[in-house]
Length: 212
Image (cartoon, one colour):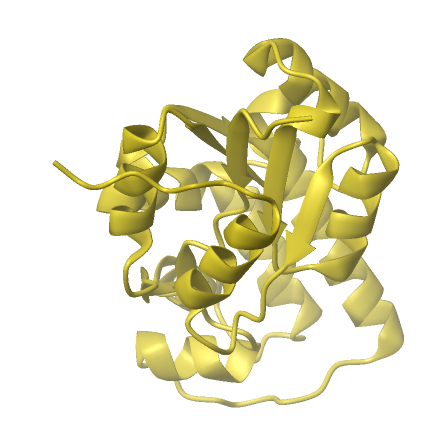
């Protein structure tokens, strides 16, 4: 079956993100005051992130909840500053790759676990803006690796799973996509991702076009 659509996760695939709270603090210029939290606090934070990415928590509620998991070490305003600094830059060559896919007649889209606060920043990056369709968890009210988000994407894109090549930085999400019948490849977010994706595209017999 021919690849008709290349779908990208955004964070860790198209744009580089902070990979830890400490890195986020450094990006935001917020002092690092507490490095570890208890398992109970970590679970509360995980539930808050999931709810935020499903669109069940608004930005102020999320910032307050995360601040509470630090037992007052950070204010909600400091959490907001770290949150807003979390997206660092586009990976080198991401926009060019999207253009080459379009030149080859291959459709592009994204399917990202994200939130309302980051979504407005993400769409300002040229490679993200160039994608032909943009799907986000907080708008779909579903998060990966839930199978339903992959089915909802298929309906929106009018393609079947085997026609989609999906690039992810999270192994669990890539495995869930494969279980849903998609082609999925994991990229290493710690390295430049575009060279990795070019190798996978070649393996899946996607011939890139020339940029105009």
